[in-house]
Image (cartoon, rainbow, N blue to C red):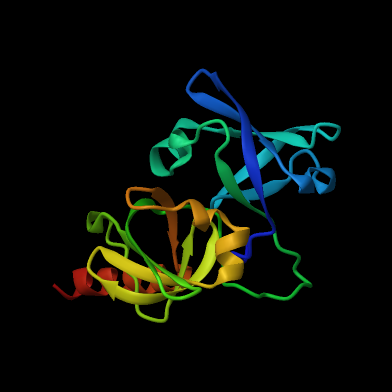
Length: 202
């Protein structure tokens, strides 16, 4: 489980295909604090560390085809900047919101607005999967815990302060960028229960 508070970013330095899977090598200063079999959030996707090179500050994770189909990992290229977060400590402060590392779907950035030191990002997504957002609700965008500003059918916006802009890969977003979304777990339960209630009431 994660909180959506990005610890560091990493750089993709190697991509190798192995059957239908891909092995991704990432370089980051926090490599020295990692261990084999550790779960980490990569742009909001929970992946397991399978190999570490402490000297080169690199580690390897493996993404299976299902992950590639549901996330933006299949679009990653050498040099891509990744948001990273290690799993939360149960005795630590909960600064974000509950993020499972299970991406629901991707979305596309279609507008970026700058407001004298802050930014507003607009995203659109496929509504056929029955996911929803609500104003002032929580959303995870590329693993970053954020509050929804505007919400409508198939779109939402978030506001970004300078610190988040500088310390995550938000500064790379532009119109057409594909990102990972994990919708609020409580909202998903409510939507599921409401759907079941409506089906049983027919």
